[in-house]
Length: 548
Image (cartoon, rainbow, N blue to C red; front, side, top):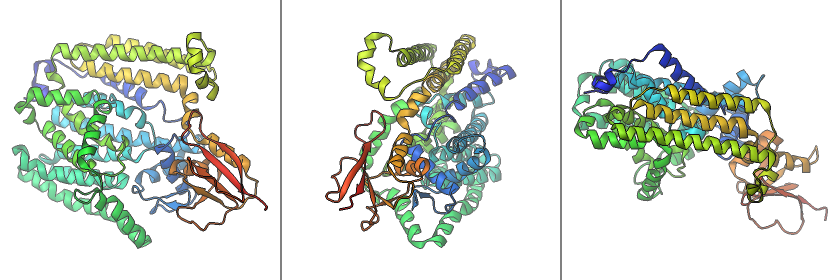
């Protein structure tokens, strides 16, 4: 029995008014934060460094960061972001225009997720899947930053919809599976094609629903259609530089495969599961309830079968992936959302009501705290907090803006009206949770964006270093300088450094050092030392050669 056939689901009618209400909620979640701030450390600053190199005339085949090849991921996202920067850079700062690519890929991901949920679970479930997805806490900040994982999400959502079509429309399904795996590959490397391919092979082995001639045809089509996606860029990279191709192959393919990766899979898997407890909330507990409560009935649904197998294959390959962070776990949100949407209707009334109440109270309290924090940063009141937070107010000054307060008030009143009007049923818990997430994010962006930007941006560091240098200066060497500040020095200061790790014999006139490293010794004079506000560990020191 599908969700669309239960009593609660059958009574639900997706009217145009409800659909537009969902559109408004998604827009209110998506738009704040796409523009209006510098590239934030560390991942977004690093990604924009690749975008800026392309805008400066760099190669589209070999992404470069501050003048050096950077092959952690293929170039789909930086190329798309550079295109948006070209199109909208005349009326937005380059970094804001480039960040529109994040919005584009998220819209693509949401559209294909909705189509897949409608195909699997019924017409009304498409919007519920989207609302549950944007309610995930791990997507809140990262879904508004320039990250290749966002384009990877779009590719995986496309592949999920391809699976939904495969048993009825094998040609279209196969093309979409291949295209989704290809987009994921060009966005962030081998994870997407490995997971999609393994999932495609396991589904008919584990579940009878996928053992059909149509699905076999879809897989054959997908196999043929995937070749151009998976071969074009590696071939171009090999033609450009065989040495870089071999380096990429070692880093992105062989080190991520089980048995070859230097990572401990057991420890990493445990770390992933601990992180998912909050990043995948609330879809993780709902998905777990679906599998526990429904058991055989839940596993009889193709949506649950696909979501479970895709999540398992993603976990398998993530467990062997070196340098794993929270951003790399974002693809897991898609299959978990699909499983949660399939079992949302099975939640008991009391559990759904608790989740609803918990969300309203939690985000309502957080909204109050945001208003109090904003007032305190402006005025220093209440005085009981002043002694404990003096360093926060002194590090970055928050300026009062009427428009920000007006927008925040409208958002708050809109949230109250939205929560008041949402009807009964299990959907209410997920919808109100997403509305609460949207409220807190929108308030933070409108009230505190300039203050947060002061802590997350490398602009002050780049401008301070630039100020110490003459208009015409020799080369600048660097030691211990990580990718994010290197990229932002290039963007904000026009400074390219010669890394001593790559060129130990670089005889430069200046030396920029990051971190607690030893001074360069005799013949050098410290010209400047500083860092981002409140950042004690990440310090920078600029030295210049003495005449003696």
